[in-house]
Amino acid sequence: MSMSFGLAATLSNSQKLTPQMQQAIKLLQLSSLELAQEVQAKLDSNPLLECIEDDDYESSDEMEDLDHTALTLETWNQSGTDIDSEEGSYSSEFSTEVKDSSDTATDIDNAYDGVYDDVYDSDYDSLDSSYDGVDSHDSLDKLQQATIDDSAIDHSDSSAEDANDYASGAEDNYATSAITSSSQSSHNFTSLEDMDSYQGGTSATIQDHVRWQLNFKRLSESDKLIAEYLMDSMDDMGFVRLDIDELLQSLDMMASFYQWAEPIEHDEIMAVLRMIQSCDPLGVGARHLSECLALQLAKLDPATPHLKNAQALLKGSEHLVSNNIKTLTEQTGLAATDITPALTLLRTLNPSPGLLFQSYQPDYSQVPESYDIPDVLVTPIRRHTTSSEDEGWHVRLNPDTLPKLRVNQEYAQLVKRGDDSPDNQYLRENLTDARLFIRSIEERNHNLLKVATSIVRHQQAFLQQGPTAMQPLILKSIAEEVDLHESTVSRLTTSKTILTPQGLFSLKHFFSSHVSSSDGDISSTAISAMIKQLISTEDPKKPLSDSRIQAQLLTDGIDIARRTVAKYREAMNIGSSTQRKQKY
Image (cartoon, rainbow, N blue to C red; front, side, top):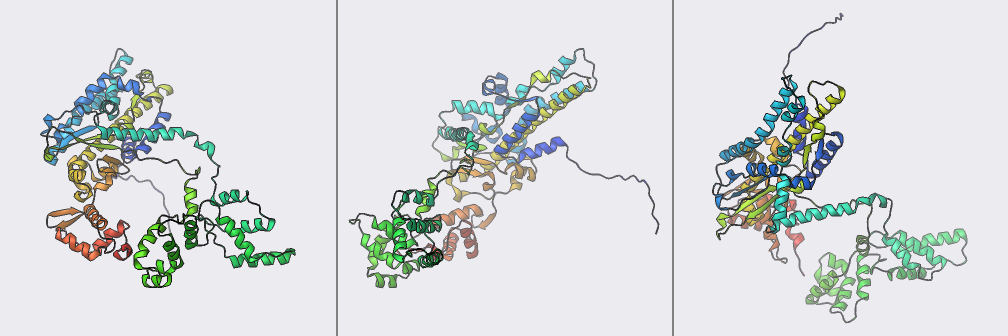
């Protein structure tokens, strides 16, 4: 066996993403909260990047001129010249009469590129030439010429103009309510910034609450011991899960071991149990559900209608649970007509008093309640016509979720051409990083608007009529229309929400498979909505079976198998017809 060492050169092709491209791809799939955290981390690490205050943001005239030029997006609306359009940045509006998808995507990109290419490409070319040793009499002037126009960068995003739109758009109640809810949620988080000071605090349990009430009762030492055993066996629902006979045996063993003078009797345990059951909330200390409801019925006014029937019904609760009505009527002596009003009275009681008490207690271990802030807002365009065919939709990004960034000009002016000192190199690298970061966010916002606008264009029937009008849609269709890769569209629709007149939805909600029907393809989401609608309007005493639902869908031209109906029904957590049936 021989071994040898040598050097060899190999040539291979490989594709690698630059750090700038990796950063742009990472920003695409971030939610609004994750984007805010990423922006804050970048602000902390890059001194040449700064956040624009609202006062400065609203006072920029150049920003308004740029936004008005870049963001009309009239290519989505070929007949929309009669609509009032003073819209903010990162917004688009269109009517139901639209152009061909391929032409639309091309026109949008041309409209976008016409503005942003002048801003970015020329500035980056001049920036590169300034660093390549081009003759210049004043390096500072040359740097200022090479610096990206920050007013164009910072204010080309949607935040400023949309903020003005929302401030002046009081007539648009729908959009105003969306901004109000998001601002209120942010205020709630601000008021709870000191949550850390409450960490370690505990909330009262149902056992603690009962112990506190027993302190006001005169109990002997043996009664206190019994009460502790009973309360320790109490679950979160407030039920005592300890068998009385087993407790009596345990206490007898303790009495013989410690040679107590008087052993504890069964009646004494029951007396302590009844004392616990007299505590608040009503029904606490019960050993099972029937006893819990009976305790609450005992506290009602004797003149309460159907009270006696309800108490009699609890005596045969095992037959009530098994739905054995014949045996139940024979045991309780009630007529079949008396069962329904008695059940109605029982349904007004609380089956778990412990959980009800716990729901009113503060839980400091939980994160404060948060609300989803939409990334995209969709509002109807109100025209001065009565025809529904003339309805249009205004799509824009939520200004509250968009970062307002710019390059710090004071630091940028300190960069000197031809200076390779560590300080100058540090400023130069951070200046380039800040500009690239701003551009990546701009591209993310622009592409998100394009994708959201395309989705709304396809799902206009859903916005007008509801879930039953959802159209089948796949990522590939949107990608081809907006001229983006399918993976880019997938990243853009991840963790993004859109607020529509039908409610708040994830962008992924609008993508679904299709099922063939007599009227063409129909979305699986629409079929699920139809099934849910049929079940919601059925007779509770004669619920629709999966076969009958299949037959009704077939009359509407939707031919699916019975097992498909069952699959959609189970996906919505709806029980079978047997489980939904109500006899009384």
